[in-house]
Length: 298
Image (cartoon, rainbow, N blue to C red; front, side, top):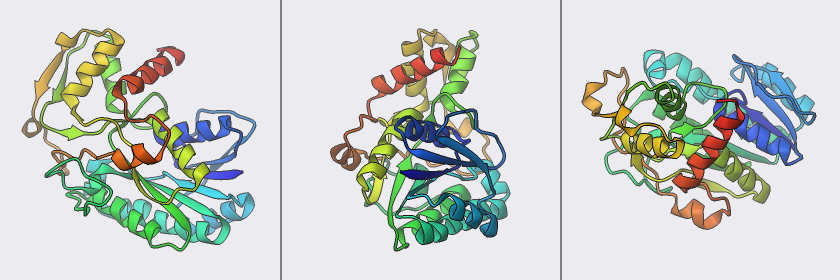
């Protein structure tokens, strides 16, 4: 089967493209700013700007993918707040372009979204809770969800949270922790902000299962609810780092440009009961992370 993956130079896009290629799919991996550090016979890398409808249309016409996984996004939360026009151009207009072209050329579309579509007041959000973003990034991702869910194409939305792992893209919290703690440097981690950290390779496993089984609807593919501080301690334990290097911090100590939800953790019961992939176990997720780190020569 031919599968097109946008944003394949991001961590989740990269891991998903590799997973699908390893499973024997013909993968068309799209990127724009950064190249994709992978080389496989059945993986074709294509540079294209998803906000350029005409150029993106040519890619769809050439590739004729059966399934599309849309992961390209402007994910810098403070950057989206400072430059809302760019965030809208990429996260909303770009998504609408993908939806329209997938509707013409493909049979199935999966969209990667975020826990930041919620306000973080109560935490433990289910797929049925009403979104209420507190920043522009969350708003644009929610608009992307609406574009996908409104399409006539068979589709699904996968929400993840604090995606981490080894690979390209922006430095995620786990990579930051490994970099600092492995050198004996102390770090500060929040005790009062809660998310559901999602390991990128396990996310890729779940996404592969969803497109294979053509599931439809919204799925929360995430790990267990925990604070950044708790996550740092769990990672340090898995990697045998010194836990005394991890210091407590609170949200008011950080001067972010964009507001952050205090507890955007997601309830994964529906996804866990629907899918076979074990993506929610923190112990398993961190063991996968350690294997990938050691395999990458870390």
